[in-house]
Image (cartoon, rainbow, N blue to C red; front, side, top):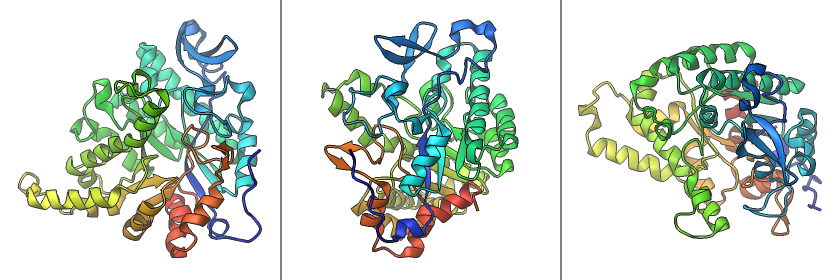
Length: 396
């Protein structure tokens, strides 16, 4: 059993009313079957049991399983996993239990991201029927608002998008905002699915619609190609391959941020807040320094005389990034861009910070924050743990 967090004295964590800006929901088995037209039959995502394991299926095609993504408290590592709902913590799929877990860990609010549809909605393309794909996106968004209604002040829904259609995405942006979603999930690597890159003007109607709603846009890592985890092209073995991808996938979001800045999205939509989710932050000082140098050295404004800020200035104005495990690299990044950082746990994913046993050690979020940030300027720490996220997601 994991050791309890240290709550004997009030700490910086307790004083800051922490907002966890990246958690995931283990979707209950009836999310789509209870909401989608029966005409689609078993094409609708549904749970099958095979050899005692709960699996998400489209027809007979397996597309994942709740046990693979619900790892908090599991004393094992990929490719080992739980079997399904029966041996997963209820806090992963039940809203009441999630709130109870948050109370135990001292977390005031949590932002919710999906699993089954993918981290940028690319998973819905496996359905192959555009009408069904759209129905499934809308059904998920309906479900998530209902789930978060258990405490709408503390559970923060992020709306999935049918990114394969800009026209339908624009419609869903307005529908999601009206329903109560607090953020819009964009595909951070649309080129992986044959769509234009984020820098392309193709997306301008989408950016414009989101800017009009005042909601932030979230770019979650892993929204593109994750095949290296399974295919293991370097022949490292499953655990090493998983760890390699998990260590390097942050750079996908670096590329996305570069597209948004160098492609002029930030310039054209100055009131649009953009969030790099689960991407870590220790690499930001080096990236921003490099971007400013190359921007000036390459005289980018000769191509784009309308650009009036440096990359680091565009970033400070409207881009945010999230972290959950970093130590030394975090300190210099907080010094540089404290107004642009948010804290997360990634609960209940395999790489999350959670109170369960990991190599015999407990990882309570409170203990991590107090250890790594306890001696930093508390004004900056409060921004990172609470104020930045409260402003982004309208939680004040």
